[in-house]
Image (cartoon, rainbow, N blue to C red; front, side, top):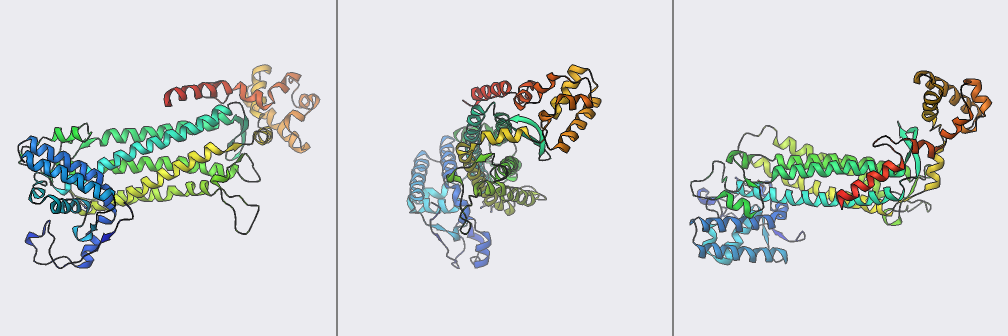
Length: 471
Ligand code: ARG
């Protein structure tokens, strides 16, 4: 429906929906700044769903005849199919999706269409539609995160005992396992998923029936429409119901944090896929070539994911800025909420899908990882720990001895295991042949059995736990 035509008719006629007190129609510029139909047409399904629930409730409460309600509900289904088949012509003069749908309903069913807006305002209507839309998107994002987590779990399971360098300050720190590194992101994306779930639970209240701002004198049943639309309950304050967009801000905030995680991981993939690192090979499916340098295989998908945070955070800041300082209740400023959320949601879904694809296809270069893990004196901490455990040195002294050994190895241009026992004992006589057993990277990772540590056993336990949770 995105490629549907929007017809602009700046007729001099006043608006048929609200123009009773207007002698003249809006200036073309007024129409241009006022209309939201070019983007809020994305709410058509939610708008029609909300209107059908409202009509059914009006009939159940005796506010509308069942005959009129039925005509409205059927007519709305016709409008729905017209939109979905691309036949519907969206009109800028009718401002937004709500009035476009209602005007078309009038053309189809005639007089009863004018009764649909009883006990309702566009203020509670748009708040309802938008909540329904954001709720659907939260579900979609949770689904996208789940798929990505499963891709990471598969990598972690395959490489639970593959050794790689762990970094701090992007300097070699201690050996870790590939599986451990993948599982770190499973945890992060799980918290992201939790944030979307929390936001979804909080937003799941119905604004419908709040009317313009004060509620309505008609005997509406807000519980009935809330239930029909899958909300947990009606919102308890009509002013709040039409005024707040905190649900959209929460969605955007959760999206921003998730985008930060994606961006950090993307940055690692960019680094890891360089000729200098060669930790991973990204698939052709998620890479591009250079038009001038034939050897190039660029990690464009990762780079773009790294950049997408800019749009998502931009949308978040934009909506916060729109909302701050608005007096209760509805202000037209709030029409500026939708494009930001639409763009952020689309961007996040695309980034999640691209990341999932990259992770599924990515091949870890096991030998390269292990070689890199063994360099840079990565087991120096293991050496110091051995001196504490086996030779009874205080950790600070052990740290100093180890530092001296590292300096010695560095001067000789070798790694720690390449120093002879005599050289080591020259630095501290308590050192025995046993020390060599802790200098290997596999030994190092195997020893880190603390809960949440990098030992393959620990990683496998976490993989099993997450598999049971994620299904
Ligand atoms: N298009 C409007 C929006 O997105 C709908 C609500 C208009 N309400 C009003 N009182 N003008 O916010």
